[in-house]
Image (tube, rainbow, N blue to C red; front, side, top):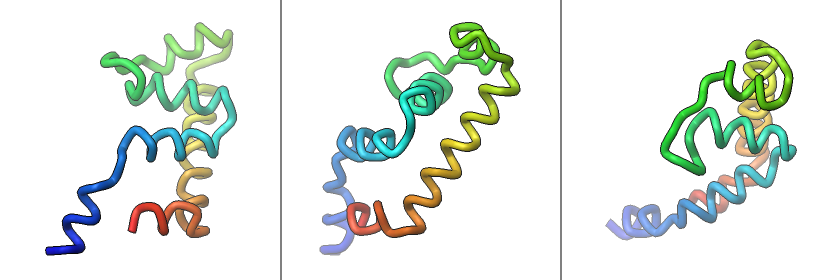
Length: 84
């Protein structure tokens, strides 16, 4: 029961800032827009690509690279201590 209480006290906005802080500015923006982290509207790869003048395939590649970087950070224990 105590362990459940500790996990429920995770500050999600702080966690998101920490996660996004591991990425480049472009990666942060793409992840936030693709997964609607900053607003309520999930954007398409096409729309995000148009704002950067790149193809949707390139946006997809950047998104995938960002997700890999986040997984690596978790596996290196950068975030495990924070998550409990």
